[in-house]
Image (cartoon, rainbow, N blue to C red; front, side):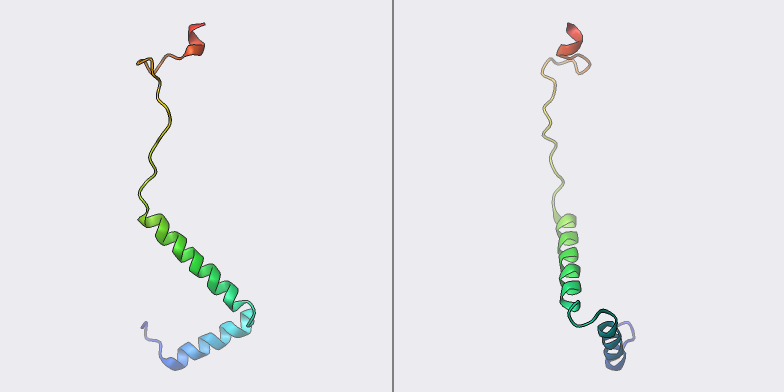
Amino acid sequence: MFGLGATELIIILVIVLVLFGGSKLPEIGRGIGEAIKNFKKATSDKPEIDVTPKDKSGDPGTNKESKS
C-alpha cells in the first residue's frame, strides 16, 4: 500500500491527531464520507432529461408576442 508500513501509518495518525484534535476527527471523517458518497452518486446517475416545453406552432422562430 504505497510503500507505507505500520510504523509510518501510526506516525501519520498521531500527527493528524495532534493537528486536528480528537473532537474534530469524526467531523472530518463524516465530511469526507459524504463527499465520496456524493461523488459516486453524481458519476453513476443518468443525465437529467430536458422537460422544457417546445413551441407548438411548428415554427420555432415565431411566438405569440411578435404577432401583435
